[in-house]
Image (cartoon, rainbow, N blue to C red; front, side, top):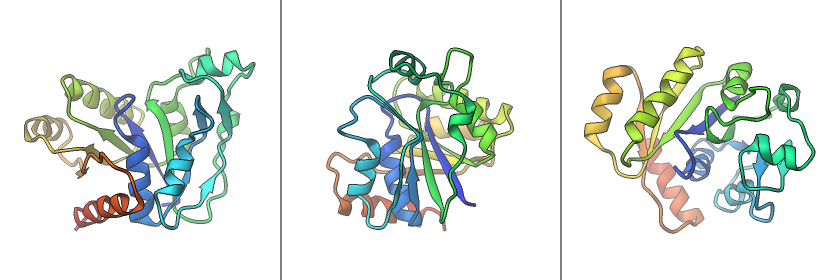
Length: 204
């Protein structure tokens, strides 16, 4: 496959860290189509500085305000459309990172990230972490993808596994691949490489 999408069950679940781990594990490149807010600390810079071989494809859209892309774009005088998100030519496998969750809006006309995932016809890894309410958020995300016939590459747990939660996920999605990476508290190339090694071992 030429590219894999990484999305989350919401904000602050570790999509960028997981993206870096996957880039390291798969020796993949990285593309985040939209970056909203803190343009001096881009997610792409985090991935670049914490991986060994990852090339960064430039973002299509850089927005100045740290908020939902549809509103950040409006404040910047930009109207995002599906045409802004044509896939670049990938020279090798590439990790594509979304923002927030699958229903994050990109404009006021109803365009959301899940529409891009369906348009791209690429498999999607869903990032989750365990907190009160995460089962609901995870199942909603997985069901939304399934309802659009979007291929789910797997569920990646950021942090310790929770067997009680995973029983429920498997009750709804019996073939779901569930892997985990440790929830990192310090970030370095070495910690990302170690997490990548642990993730690779789970593919056996």
